[in-house]
Length: 183
Picture 1: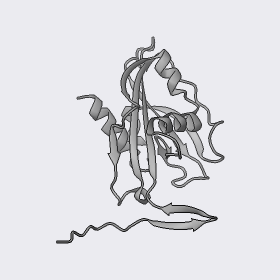
Picture 2: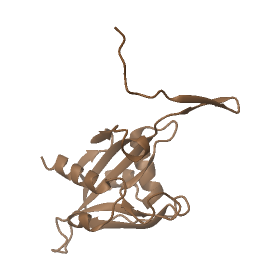
Picture 3: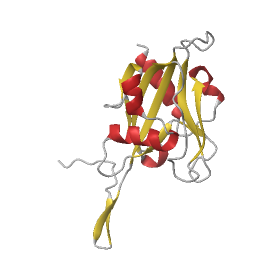
Picture 4: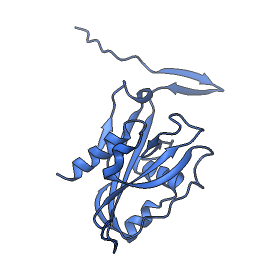
């Protein structure tokens, strides 16, 4: 008996002698959390998440999100996690791993994979995360990002996540990561 599936096959196109497939894309989401270990008693022990505001050159302009982007050719998920953070915020994950106390490390394997075709242009998303202790926030810059990709970079207290308008349900992703690691 033949079995039927609800899928729609990917299409291939010949463009300039190259076969190009029209298929679903893989996106990487980076949840980076700093736990403050500083003299300031109001900040000590508080968790802050790295977010950015989407610029005028990308979709969902004006909304906040975790660092995110597409997986490039010849790149692993962990490499895309590190690259996207560097490009969009200037934060060097390898330096953090060398110099900070790591609390939770989901940089080699995603803590969440979403394949729901109803979400965000049918992208498959791979969510990676890192939690570390620090007494100062890593310096941020948008100098490595594409023009008009990032409008603002900030570390916000995770208690304030609901105060921001997030794209791509990234507020839920932050909470999911915190819930996963608190168990």
